[in-house]
Length: 388
Image: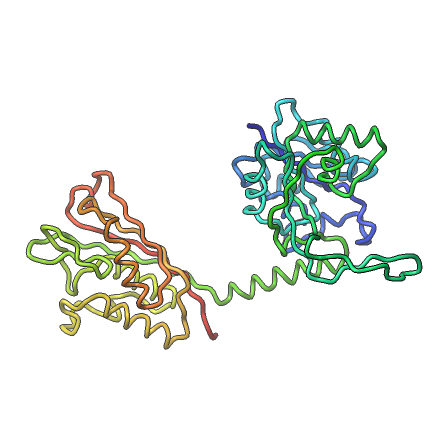
C-alpha cells in the first residue's frame, strides 16, 4: 500500500503579518521542518510532497538538505487558496497512490504518534480520518451587529486538526466534485463530507496548535520552554550485573527463589536483576554504583537479601530528593526459563512503589550466558529531581 503525505506551506500568512511564517526558526529549526519530521520518521509514509510558493522553492530545498530530509519527492507550486494548493499536489501524485495524508506546515508540534494513529484508523469502512479536540468554551452564534443569536451545544462540537488521512481516489474525486460545484471548504474532510463520504474523528492533541498569529508562535515557544524546564529535572541511569553459576546456592532473581540445580556466586544473594536495578537507580541520582554503597568487603552484606539493599537504595534516593519514575530491565539467561516467575517479581517491586517492566531473553546459545555459565541483567531507570 502506497502512502504519501502532502505538507501545505503555500499560505501568505496574512493574519500572522509575514509571508515567511513557516520559515521562522524555533530552536534553530524552521517551523515547516518541525512539521515534516514526524512524517519523515514514519515507515508507512513512502514519500512527501511539499506545496509552497514558487519563489520559496530554493529556500525549501536548502532547509531540506540542511536537516537531512530524504523523503520529499517533489515541491509543488501552491494555488490561490489552500484548496487549490492541495489539489495541485493531489494531481501530481503517482497513480498507484492508495492513501494520502494532508498536513498544514503551520502545525509544527504534531507528534509522530498522532500521525500513526490517524493512519492506522483509516480502514475500508470509512473514507477519511481527522484528529479532533473537544471545545471547552461556551460557543455562541452571532447575528448582525454582534447580537448573540443563541448558544450552541458544545457537547456535539469539536475543533478539527491535521494531519487528515484519506483514500486517495475518494479524495481526488471529492475535489473534482467541489470544483464542478464551485465549492471551497475550510479543510479536506469537508469536501469528502459534501460528496457523501464517511469521515471519522479520533482524539487529537491539545499541543498540536496552528501557528496563525504571532501569539500562536509565542505559545509554541512557551511549550518548548516548558519541555526544556521539565528536562532539567529528569535523569537517566543505566545498570548492569552478571554472576556465574555455582553449586550449593539458591537461585534468587528479582527477590524470587527459582527452583534450579545451581545458584549464582556473590557476596550477597547474587540477585543480578536487583543489582542491575540498584545501579540504574544510583546512576539516575548521580550517586555512584552498588559497590560504593554496599561493598563486598563489608561482612554486613554477606548473604544479605538484595531486596534489603534495594530498600536502602530507595531511602538514599529519597534523602537526595530523587524519585524513580520508571524502570525497564531485561534478564539474560539460557536456563532456567524466567518468564513464569516475572509476575511474582513484579509483586515484589510493587511493595516498594516501583513502576517497572521486566523482560527475559536467552542469548541464543552464545557467550557465557549461552553456555549456561551464568546470568546477566541490565536496567534503565528514569528519575525526576524533586529539588535542585
